[in-house]
Picture 1: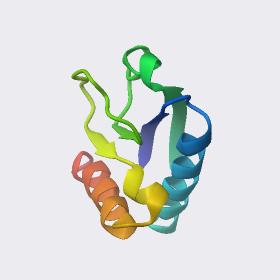
Picture 2 (picture 1 turned 30 degrees about the horizontal axis):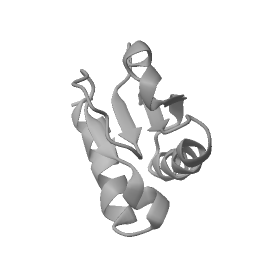
Picture 3 (picture 1 turned 135 degrees about the vertical axis):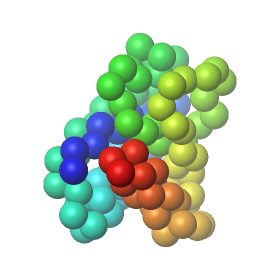
Length: 97
């Protein structure tokens, strides 16, 4: 399975990096080997969603975009982290059925 993810935070650097590392590790452990991803800041989301299967954001995205959006804060804080990771995996695998 191949997935294309977009990780979003305020600056597109620090928190999106931490979340991206956790999510990609989780997906690889579940057999998803072909993971492509980008990181961006909130102001650049709309210009980066083309071809993206899922957006994981640690900040509110104030406009509608085509791919589903998951709140990435639980991955960062650890509160409900597993539930959020399972939701990401579920969304990505449902799209492939």
